[in-house]
Image (cartoon, rainbow, N blue to C red):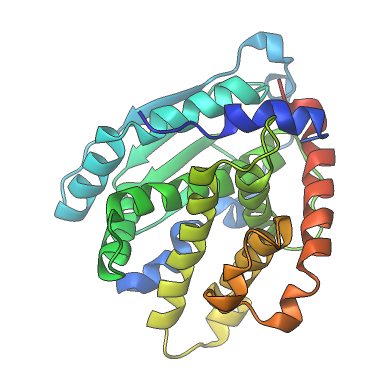
Length: 287
């Protein structure tokens, strides 16, 4: 059983006021279909109290392609979705039941559907992550891929909370969702420390986007118009928040990760702003 992430952090958060082809497909892997779907107006079923017993439930759908079968095995053998659902159920007040699906999508992707109110983690995304970290020479590419999928899930949790709780977001929702993933994974627990596996997860999330950015040789109008920031921009944003959350401990984001010193200077303030924003937005929704 892997280390569970969110329940460990939740107490501290409450106290602290909590496509293309190849690797290029990772550009969409933590994206959301929410940008192309118009969220429905909130009805009584969406605003029910936590006493209604909303729960995240897990289903592993069938897989037929080699990539999907490998991704399903990676997720299922390591109980990835079960652990993530447990984290949400232990920490967030869900007004309704939320299905969490592992699915064959025929592309490396993950998404929150505001119309169906489901989170989907595509098997191909886990498979791609394993390939990326194997190519990078990681000693345990499966563990790295799982960490990246954890962060991908919390990105989708960002979309989910914005939709379920009707949270006010300024700027690009995709950036805000990246911020929530960083916030959850980098906020210290009640022992005052950031969980080591959580730090690895958000770091590997950034590394996956770095691999995608490296695979892109040309950018066009569609890339510039996309609801997601460019892969390299997401890398620098994630590195900035990692560094800013603890500059002394995460100086390797500059020395090894390539975060420009000019950006790094403002990262502690960026982190404080990010942390304040999400702790304010989610304060009343923690259990």
